[in-house]
Image 1 (spheres, rainbow, N blue to C red):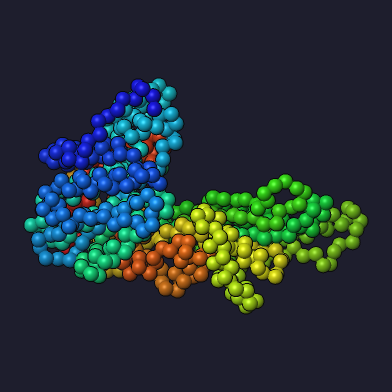
Image 2: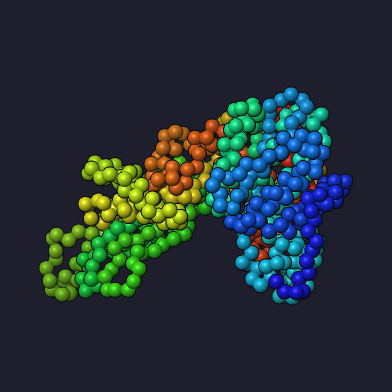
Length: 567
Ligand SMILES: [Zn+2]
């Protein structure tokens, strides 16, 4: 940090409460947001614990929780090396009703490498705004910073302003218990930006609240950031569901050769390249859902397994993709990928046959009858079945790899398992094995055909049209929040059969990524995202738009909450 970046005073939870308790809603949200941006809570650091503690101390200042401290509690994440935790605060309405609306936000942010040598300013909205307002290299940014309508800073829009909105509504409802026909539970989670462990562990706590204490969760409202979807887009998007995600992986086992006999090889890098070209950014693989932002798969990793130079072609290679799912099941995705991999392998085979024919022609040598470039394609599930039939101790091999590689990166560990199985297989012909590795995000959305979910859609539409009249905003309701969010883990639509097909194609699910799919499905909280609005999340110019986020959004969430609880 350079000396010209002056420090801003960081308010204690007690001082923050004193400062905001009597000011209007929009000011409350703004002051709290700025204070929370000042608490560094980068994913994977102790800051995630510090912000949780800060929030607990702040909520304690609210008279309702001072009088009923048992309504504010934390849940430590099991075995977490940093001691990260979920924070819960519950307002119980005086009108007897079990109906409960769940508000949730994540407390972590991405890192600040994008700020270069200016990292300290990332946590100081006023300093950053001043810097942007004074610089001369980006006129557009200068104008935005001078407008006074935006708050800059890491986490400003993703998503400390979201926490602030929920906190302010928590304060509001704590003074409305007499009229509150139901309950409001606020939950703040760590670890959203990568593994989603916070919300995944909360499933347990939420089930306890439902099954032991009888709370009925009628709606979950996440307020993770929303943004424009195209240039000049002025819409405010409300999402009635969340996109899901799979990470399909390809373990490709070929046939090595000396480069002097290269045409006898089945080169896994060539297979990998062809599969990649068939799948990567291929819109044929994006689901067709009219009006939704559907995206094709993108390659996140492609390597061969050679670790040093020599003149032998590679023996195996690895490839994986980010794969968004909207309505398709994991089995649908697996079927599509097997199809694409088959096409790629046939293409490679035909290419090699043709090249070998040309080679024989030029060199005036006879063509080989025994050489084959055929490549088999298996789903992990099919491959396991085959090995088991051959009498191979699949469980034993998997357990050994897991035991010998504790702490290994999760995707690498999955590839190691598949490789070990391949090594145990006496069949050494070229093959492609397709499996799923972490993370897995379930997809969900409110369904028109389910009565209770349709009611919520209607309530949302009523509230939004009311606010379109009261304000100058235009709202658009869409099904799938496109940026991956914690809401994925609160509800799940897959059948038992579909869940099985996912787990069966996921090496060592129970040890490596035990998402409690059955519990999530049982919990099944209809989940929506009414997000804070801004631009450039995960970038140096991350910023939240103040008029809408601080002045309108809190009231929309409030109105919807009351409508749902009073229904
Ligand atoms: Zn976020």
